[in-house]
Image (tube, rainbow, N blue to C red; front, top):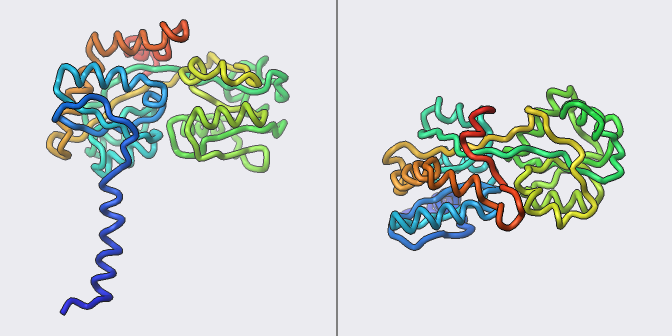
Length: 282
């Protein structure tokens, strides 16, 4: 007879494995039989992924299932073979994934940039400074309230790189870690009167809803934010082939036209730059 205690142990080990193999799908686009899972953050939150996914699905009999995750989590899901592809903004991590062999088809798809926003009164005086590093140093010196996503997302990784360049290890009551996504953290900065480094796309879409915040610093090349797509190696997951075809679509003229024009009708300006523009900073 199979010992009850051993059976319980096997079940305890199996349940987390099953949970990990089924990441939560946030939204699906299309209704075709060729299903693939894509993990990303802001492009999904802001609606760009929906437009790209529906255009691709209509022509290819596909269904795109979006798993909402920041860059760090997205790459973890890809490495664990829990999704078929990712769209992320952490170039060094992308290169590492390709080098280690668990991701392929690195493709530059576009870019935006980061803005440092904060109270219009600008208590740390960052608006007059010449670089992001100087701005971060000033915030730390003043111990002005600063919000961090703290979630290993691409935004958090960029923030960490700027702190490191500034020679600052942020800590204390002024440094607030939200463990949340971009829009939610931006809203906290607005409601609680602090600084935050947001991507320009989210600001264009949501800035009108943040009346207590203003763009106080932008324009440093260090804050350019390039996006890449990565896919599973061929045959590694059921949707790998369809995911690779989707990356080709995003990089095509049709896909790039969608990216470079997205947001113009609703906000008066594009939320993202296309890959040709992004090449200058890649």
